[in-house]
Image 1: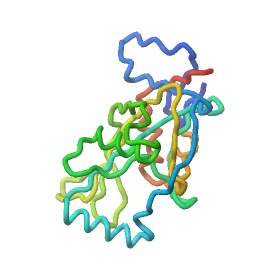
Image 2: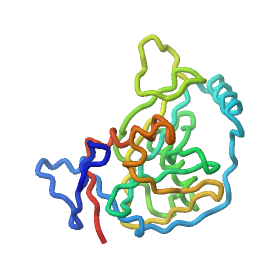
Image 3: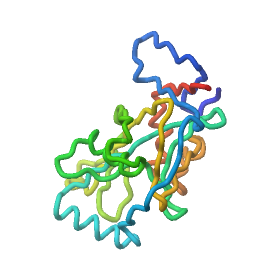
Length: 221
């Protein structure tokens, strides 16, 4: 199978891949979208009605708690024999990775599991199927309140305003996703988001490059 975005390694093997080096962490098994059940639940409140609202909320949170730390999930499924990423769409225009801001003193793994359960499950216990949070793919920084997230943190930036970390979340072969009614959970081809900052922003459009160190193994029915 051809590479996605020129750098991803994708294979089809219903029996899984053998890793001669014993490093199974570099093999990412993904299952067909049809293996999963999708439903909806009550809408979540939208915190920001405008860019100005978001900017003010970020300033208030920074004044109270300092650096804002967010965690987001990269979740992959198979559709039409190609890897797709699960994204949340807000107001039919903005795309987001599932996740959100950590609470003070909350660990990154616990915080991401809490956010995933809140946005994609019925119950806080992940509906009885624990989330498998893997390694951190990358870290993004917001240098100031009115700047975009970027990969680098120059030494001259002494007080960044936000840190966002992306984690691989491995799915089992079946699961129920229950998203709020005011958020659409969509499966988008990795080749579509690759370097497409205009539509998906710098973080999401950079995911295919971050996944280049993995072999994506499609488990067929």
